[in-house]
Amino acid sequence: MVNFEKSIPAGIDLVDAILKLKREKNAVILAHYYQEEEIQDIADFIGDSLELARAAQKSTADRILFAGVHFMAEGAKILNPSRKVLLPDLRAGCSLSDSCPPAKFAKFRETHPDHFVVTYINCSAAIKAQSDVICTSSNAVKIVKRVLAEFGQDKPILFAPDRNLGAWVAKEVGREMTLWQGACIVHETFSERRLIELKVQNPDAEIIAHPECEPSLLSKADYIGSTSALLNHVIQSPTKKFIVATEEGILHQMRKRAPEKELIPAPPNNSNCSCNECPFMKLNTLEKIYAALLNDGPEVTVPAEIAEKALKPLQRMLDWSV
Ligand code: 13P
Ligand code: SF4
Image 1 (cartoon, protein in one colour):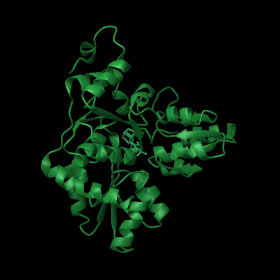
Image 2 (spheres, protein in one colour):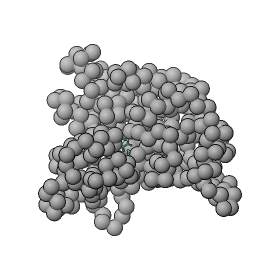
Image 3 (cartoon, protein in one colour):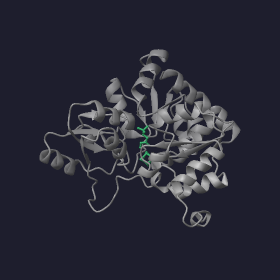
Image 4 (cartoon, helix red, strand yellow):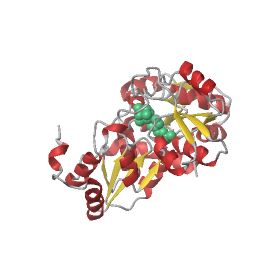
């Protein structure tokens, strides 16, 4: 294992050193909202998965340092293959992506040969390569509606890997889909009972939730959306208080961009754990970002054959969500 501490000279100002290295190496830092606050603060661009994919595709920097998780970095590499994509810690995976192993998914598809395969971006490149179109939490409803408009209202759809997002989209679109039974460990952690107790104590608060949460929790939400959608809702809504059911990294941008609003993180089942922190996203640190820029690695690559197949559904998503 790499000893990150060893690469850091004593007494160094890490933020200054990262910004200097970033200029020297012509690198851009793309960060997801679930990153630690200090990482969000040095990023060139912060966004939800769709916005990050777009930013990666149009980047002209030599290096894209992805402060996020592995599937996001893979997506950047597929969309912009001539750039070097760095991920500060290659162990930054995703429980949702892991819940959909490529060989098992291939078998599942074989049992549904007539289905159109819509896949949530939180999956590996090997799963994307088996998909007809990709979606994110911000465009999933739009993408499924477009599939039905293009291929007929009766077209059967297989949605993977998130059963909660899939169930929510099916409800919004008003038709059933065959769902792969994957889930996110962070979004399934919220306690419906404790959320209701919190709402009773704060009747003036709006509950806002990410669609990866379980259907029973989503049924209590006043507003459901991607991380960017939740952020914009907090900024624009006249409501003053919000109970936020998603990974708590997003609270940093909410506090920065809407300082007058009161934000209460939704409570996890176990009050003694910080389960609403994504353990994968939180593997990235300023030290590892510095080391990644200095060492030009770890680099994320995608085998050419998989990248070629995965690009088609990714590009289709981008074309359909303009
Ligand atoms: P967003 O696309 O809403 O940012 O979600 C990404 C994610 O991993 C949620 O768990
Ligand atoms: Fe994956 Fe969940 Fe972490 Fe998002 S919050 S990256 S879905 S494990």
